[in-house]
Length: 79
Image 1 (tube, rainbow, N blue to C red):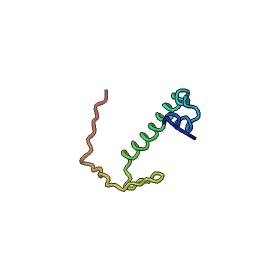
Image 2 (image 1 turned 180 degrees about the vertical axis):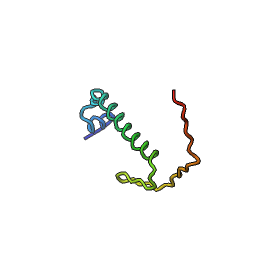
Image 3 (image 1 turned 60 degrees about the vertical axis):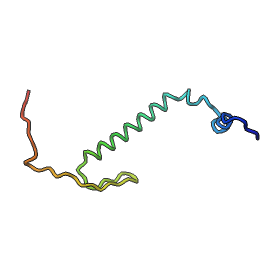
Image 4 (image 1 turned 120 degrees about the vertical axis):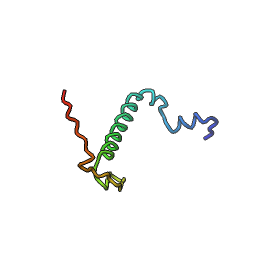
């Protein structure tokens, strides 16, 4: 087999080069959904009061700031 152009290599790897044009809406939706899931997981980790967080193959040991009674400020302005 004689390949002169790198574009011919791509045609061998991906038999339908227009696949991305046909499914671009699906890929954008999939990437957006995965980003949203990661955002929720990271948000949970930031707001969590746990000292050790394990999620799938990731783990995190951290120092959590203790909430003390004198550091809490209540705002009773009810409209």
